[in-house]
Amino acid sequence: MPHRREKLVTVVGSAYFQPIADLVDRLVRRKPHRPNRVQSGHYEHGYSAAIVLLLVAMFESYMSRVRFVQAGRVTSKVRSALDVVFSVFPRLRHRLALEEVYVLRDLLMHSHLWEIEYEWGGPVPMVLKSATLNPGYGDKKFHDRVNMRTYRTKAIGLSVFPSRIDRRDVLKVFDTIWKTLERFQNQDINQVSVSHLHVRFQGKTVEFGSLRNEIQSAL
Image (cartoon, rainbow, N blue to C red):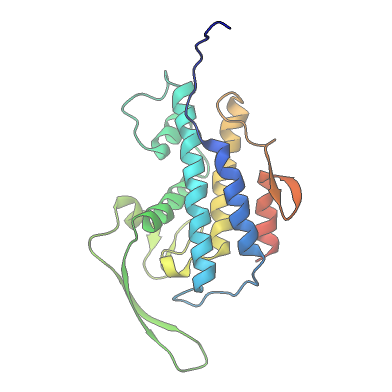
């Protein structure tokens, strides 16, 4: 048999879908508990943070493919996934929401440290008294997009306390990332093709995009 040479472009992309589905399954099987001002609970914020990070990792992989397919439009000077998006869609309608997803991604990935003072012993389990971000954390994007009175992002209300992340944040991140991927798919299906892909979820084969409804129904 003659030797043949082929090319592989190392885009992980949809390989993240099943691990994300497995984590979503584990999360939504638990009864939701609305977080207080300080935390959402060990299981809730742990699984929610893991899902958010995998969603962003999946998204970044697809943005690498966009960079490859649109090499003439996305120059070598463009470094971040956000810059790839805004190079192709400079007037993206949900630009602020996507920036805020990356605020959440950064604070989870880089383990932003908060010093939180709270009061307990009354009818409310934990009453927030003050919160200070360690001065070694937070970039321009963080300071532009975070309301330091509510400790949430300004456009879509993502929590910026890692201890308070919950499935509501997961839903907002899922919606924002999926909307962006569909925007690229509608432009050129050769660069991003996601709407037809399936995963196994609770014993059934479902479209990956339908997981957002599973998360919403479990709020």
